[in-house]
Image (cartoon, rainbow, N blue to C red; front, side, top):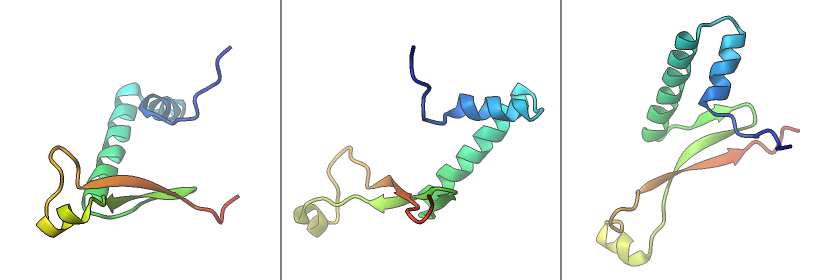
Amino acid sequence: MSKPSKSVGRAYLVSKLMEQGYSRRQSVVIVNVILERMIRALQRGRTVEFGNGKLRRVKLRYSQWWEMMRDSPADRPEYTIEWEPDLKRE
């Protein structure tokens, strides 16, 4: 017997919306719009807050040589996304 997954993916969110009475097509559109808005906010440097923490964009640190050249290694993203849990909540 396998353990249920702890990750909340698109299919899970769509199924929860369908339980609330939305059609599958409506549920997929709603989930896609929400995720697209989250992606755009992170690209602009804003944080995306949840009940148990937040996602934020963080600049990757490379060696001082790359900083001095104001460049980054080839094929490496300049930013990444970091999860910051809310430690005050239980």
